Image (cartoon, rainbow, N blue to C red; front, top):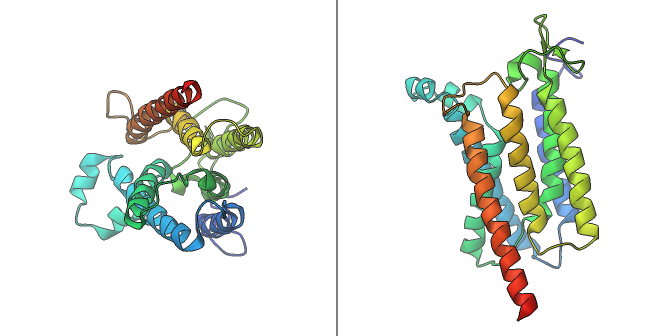
Length: 247
């Protein structure tokens, strides 16, 4: 296989990113809890998610190599060329919560995003893998049987495929929890975020990106902050549930 692997003459990153957004949005419209939030308010939540994700994905990317970003602060091409999923998720969370405050909606909406996000991310990572070296999402050199030569004669961890596999397992676990009606409203999204951020904290140790923050990279620092937040949030919800049970 040659990388990038063009499909009908279309660059794989462009093709699968477009498919990820299109299919993810269609999955959201089809699977969202229609009794939980009306369509007009749901669309505002989606707008908040998209805008927040767009800004967050860029902001965290700029911190990957802060000195390089400062050197290229006036280069539109550099500032617009990269993005990160972790930044998109955390930025999207802030965007959703901001949109909910503006429209006066107080119920949790996160659970409706779990399936669309997971499906979209898995599709997008296919494009990352087929793009090869140009995408900069591969892992370090390896002698594992999973190693993939992206075109320069070096076998590397296909971290894109690892992520697709992990997301599939995570989705199955969350689906089982949903069928068993475990927990509270919003728990599925909280566990999704906790699981994915934990995965990124670990997997980024085998990515050839700068690790200038005490041995961690920008994504790992953001993941640690997100993990701490969701551990606190889930612990808080568990305490509230126990108090409600004993009341």
